[in-house]
Image (cartoon, rainbow over all chains, first blue to last red; front, side):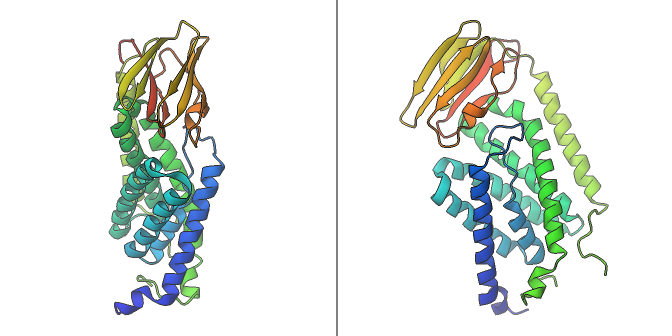
Amino acid sequence: MSKKSRFSAKKTAFCGAMTAFALGISYVEAILPLDLGIPGAKPGLANLVSLFLLFSFGPAEAGTVLLARILLSALLFSGPIPLLYSLAGGVLSFLGMWLLRHADRFSVTAVSMAGGVLHNVGQLAVAALLLGRATLRAWLPYLLLVGALTGAIVGLLTRLLLNRQIPEKLGLTPKNA
Amino acid sequence: MKEKYPLFKKADLLLAAALLFAVGLSLFFLFSGGKTGETAVVYLDGERCAALPLSEDTALEIVTDRGRNLVVVENGKVFVKEADCPDLVCVHTPALSAGDPKTIACLPHRLVILLEGGDGA
C-alpha cells in the first residue's frame, strides 16, 4: 500500500465520524453516571472506537482519534484536571493495547480487558500523584477488577462489530486486510 | 466462513494469569496495611488541613478558590454532604466508618478524606 492511500479522504471522513461517535459516548457516560461500586467509575464504552480502529486499521488511526476525543471532551465538557486523568488513562491503555495487538496472539476481548485495567491504573497513578499515596491502596483491587469487567464488555461488543467487516464494505482498505 | 476475530485465543490465559496476580498483590497490600483509625483527616492538595474524630457529630465547610465541600460526621461516619464540583463524585461516595481503608476524594477540588489513628494509617 502506498503512503498516500493510508489517509485517503474517505478514511479521514470515516475517522472524523468515529471521533464524533466516541465523543458522543463519552458525553452520555459523563451525564448518566452508572454505579459500578467505585465513585466516578465509567464503563468506558468509548474505548470501543479505539479498539475497532486499532484492529481494523492500525495504531496511527486509533491513536489520532483517541487523542482528538480526549482533547475535545476536555474542551467541551470537563476541563483541565479531568483532562490529566483521561490522558493518563487513555495513553497508558492505548500503549498497552497497541503492544498486545502487535503481538497478534491475543483475542479482542483480552486486549480490551488489558486496556480497561491499564486505563484505571493510569488514572489511579495520577490520583496518587495529585492527592497522595494513601488514596491508592484501598481502591486498587476494585479498579483492577472493574477495569477487567468493563473491558470484557467493551471487547465483546467490539468483536461483534469487527466481524461485520464494516471498513471492507465501505471500500476502505484496512492495513491488515 | 471462519471468523477473523475469535472469541478466545490460547495466549489470553497469560493475561488472565497476570490479572489474577495483580489483583492478589493489590489485595495483599490492602490487608497488610492494618486497620485505619477513628479520626477522619481532610487533606487539601496533599496537605493535612483538618482532623475530625468520628465519635463527635460535626460539620465542616471547606472553601478554597477551587470550590466548596461540606464534610459531615454523623453517627460515627464521615461523608461529604454538599459540594459545588461538577461531577459530585465525593457526594456520591459511600460514608466511611472506623476501620474502612477506602477514601473519599473530590478530584476537582483536590480534597481527600481518609481515616487515621489506627495501627495502619
